[in-house]
Amino acid sequence: MPDASTIGLTLKRIRKERGLSQEALAEKAGLSKDTVAKLEQGRRRGERTTTLMRLANALDVDLGELTGRRERVGGREGASVLAVRDVILAPSLLPGVGGLDAADSGEPTALPDLESAVARGWRMYWEGDLTALTAAVPGLVAEARLTQRSIGARAAVPLSRAYQLAACLLNHLGKPDLAALAAERAIAAAHQGDDELQHATVQGTYAWALHRQARLGEAERVAAKAASSIEPSFSGSPVHLAVWGGLLLNALAPRVAAGNDPEEYLSPARAAAAAIGDRRVAHFDAWFSIDIVHMQSVYAWATLREPGRALDVARGVRLSGLQGIARGRHLLDVAQAHVDARQPQAAEARLADAHATAPQWFRHQALAESLVGEVREATTRPSPRIRALARAVGID
Image 1 (cartoon, rainbow, N blue to C red):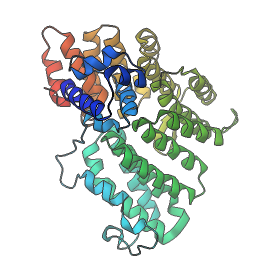
Image 2 (image 1 turned 180 degrees about the horizontal axis):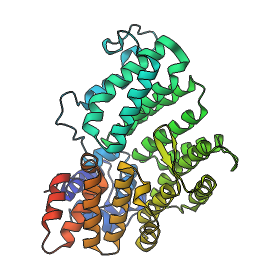
Image 3 (image 1 turned 120 degrees about the vertical axis):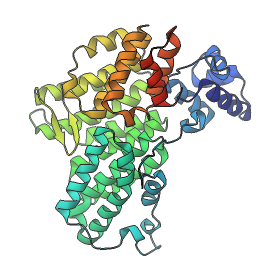
Image 4 (image 1 turned 135 degrees about the vertical axis):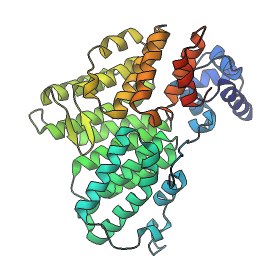
């Protein structure tokens, strides 16, 4: 999160614009007046995103407006969030506007080449190379769109996956409204094809965008309905089970962010992983396994502020079973549990591990920013390592 004093000033300004007292805002958000007062005074640092979501909803503003988050992609020619925006909001997509955008002109890409290019984009994503991905996504979406216009439904899946990739990137860059629109485009593209699992999977991405907009109930319902629409037999194909289990975990995230019990989704996800067995199953470039389920269980208990349970589950997670930024996210959740358990040195070590896993991705994570700030403040003499992490997330 940005500096606590900045959030405090913004919170106070919006609260007064809404004509609310601290007591009224606290009641509306389901928080204590003391929490609101300390936030406004800049005395409550490292506040959880779930708390800020409650305040944003109570004030009827986007979370980004309250926190003042901005994307920080740079360092490579062509890496522009505006270019990603423009390809998502291309005027040529509107009925009656007519004509192709300049980026959509030329010869269509051969389908195998397009599929390979989309797969490369997803590898960049999981490796956390957000700058390279930001540079690549506009051209990738335009290529996929042109090919789909040329050959029709056979290119529906790669086009859907290109839009889905844009949505995931935009979520990380703090642009959930654009991410939701990109996910809508991905759903529409998948609907033109015949892969029901891709159509279901991208609804999980849409749910994530709703989650980032603090629309928690809608996010849970979208993911849960998508999972219900493809519910498999436990003797079914591992890929089908993996997609279904992944959607259950998509529904889990907003459920626990709203403070609700996670077992409704964790239990069937564990059953799906058990049916698959001790292996990791891929559907396109997403993975599902028992380690992924355990990872999400750690997230759930850390989010619900039950650090003991989170750390107990974390002992059973094999880091080798987690890929790229999934491993980084898990390490952040473990660090959060250590912070809540008042173990700042252990939290610092896990934060350093997460940063080493994917440095570019790390600096875009609000949770990393928050936890680094908390660990630094909890230490009488901050170590060189925590000072370096503070510089990495832009709070030094």
